[in-house]
Length: 103
Image (cartoon, rainbow, N blue to C red; front, side):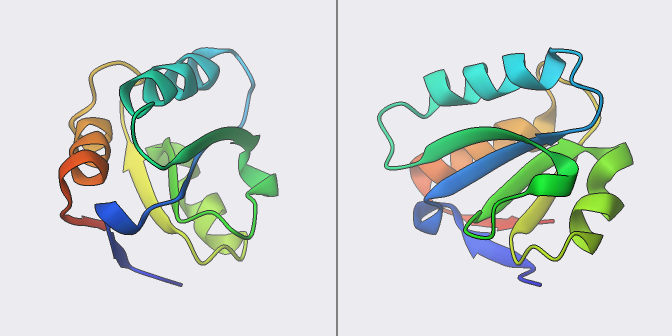
């Protein structure tokens, strides 16, 4: 498992969820909008179906261990709240400006 990546090297960002209640879909939309000028694909997927080519997985802290056990080599970035979480803001900043992302 990769433990860090430079934000400028991220090409696929995955928002992983569990319940499908819509909050993570909204977060994926916000990330697509924030990163639309960057060479990054933003996808939304169930935590048990993370694509093998994901560079970074953003998921609620309660799902982080499941994401890690899923066999992905992506950096896992857990967050606590769906709107305005500092971890999500760090992901956006690192992809736009460079800088290390770790999980």
